[in-house]
Image (cartoon, rainbow, N blue to C red; front, top):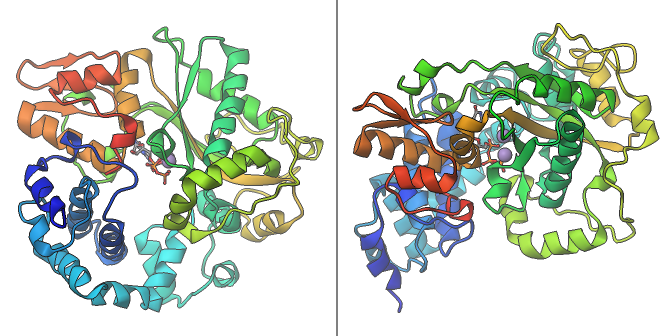
Length: 452
Ligand code: 8DG
Ligand code: MN
Ligand code: MN
């Protein structure tokens, strides 16, 4: 019984997509440690070299699928993808209860500042490094007051900095479902048959997420075109848009057979999408019943996930009609956004111009009845929907392994748009996730099992 994990380790498959990886598992002390070193590698390694970070991530993935706790280093003999460095960390924790490397990371103030900056929407490792190492900044206030930071050209960053307090707060599952409903209701006025699905981490069973990923489609191929523009127009006229960028579809048939890299950037797809920040009434968050339920189910998530922020339980909250947006919010509506632009920011008439950081900070700090949340809206045509659903459900690591497996074991190319048989030189259609797994000759995995 003590070494039950040992028997399991030998049976773990090579590819993550061949395993069942639950959100919560028996070796979280070990995977948390590996995540910490992975994060450090991601922040410090230059030139988009994710190989070190990836190695730690893969090692953690292997541990996540074990149903028994590892109690000695012997237990993980035969477990795939455990490199020497990861093994040393695991060994040290099993023997001493802690890892010196992880302790060093926790006490590395410079690294922790970079990590905090990376939680800003629009900030990646290189910006974070520059702010800490070159500009010697330590807090968001420092960033706001730094004369050499002028995100005038990058509206996204200005909003990210100004609304960091809002955006670092994780979105709860209940809120995500309500945001789906709000978006769906607007879409229904355009076309009654449109479908909207919450994907990303929420679909994998997470109770909190850094954003809400909504996959939009229409059962009739072609009827999805033009919907996103109209949807954004409607949401904007209701005052629900703070900032966003529309990306046109860049998909073409020949892309199905083109090989892309399996780096995080290589996973970007070519769907028409809107990536942005929406405004929602603060009390959209939870009804008393919801918050109690959320809280019970997710106390663990809550502390593991970004911020380690406790949700405030406010039992005085009344049940709100989530389709009703407060009149004060309506007043802030900007009705005159420019159609020609792909960036939908509030107009200067009612709200600060998109790039003026100090004005945005004023807005963020003003008394307001709404909260800003990150939302991704993706449009997938019916013929690509099953693949898009797999892709946007993730996890990123699960996708990566699916693609690697398809390429190496089947000589097929998998993306969020489809599957291409390289030998027969033809695409293979699928109408459900089950079918995608079937074609790939893989056992079907529920979204909850894709948390690698
Ligand atoms: P979180 O938001 O709860 O933190 O986690 P998540 O929901 O798993 O991550 P995400 O960053 O919101 O991404 C959701 C999934 O979408 C992820 O598995 C990767 C996948 N995805 C694609 N194409 C694209 C794309 O073009 N951009 C992004 N950002 N994600 C994509 O399939
Ligand atoms: Mn997400
Ligand atoms: Mn997302």
